[in-house]
Length: 193
Image (cartoon, rainbow, N blue to C red; front, side, top):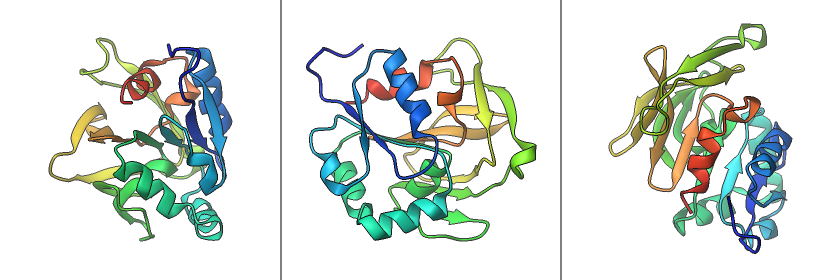
């Protein structure tokens, strides 16, 4: 997928399922490195913000000063992909309950909207611009995108709801593509650099 000397993709590794994203990138031949500090942003080709617990991630962001480096990275036009909690952190508004976010993607997202951990599910969704077949989507205490701002493209839907969106260099999914064998979403993200 990537040339041998290509810059690695960063995977935010402060909490959550970052290891599964690393496995997916390895499987498709993309170099990667874990990002835990502001200095780790140097030389990365893109950033994945994984699922996990968004409030815990925000606390770590405050302690380690990671919020501004993410904003600067996006501001330089570098690609960023947030899944589940990562999508919550990228949103301009997070509800249920309201929480701070980075405000980098004009969406309103409702936290834990699919229910508790026991309500997790695997569904099939449509991403017609990316795939000619339905894509398996894993929802774990997933958020729901309740509002899509101007210029935000809906790339995927499940049960009529937007679940994969993009504006410019920022992509967000409410599901976990790294927990399936389908490489479609990650391959699309790699093309954004």
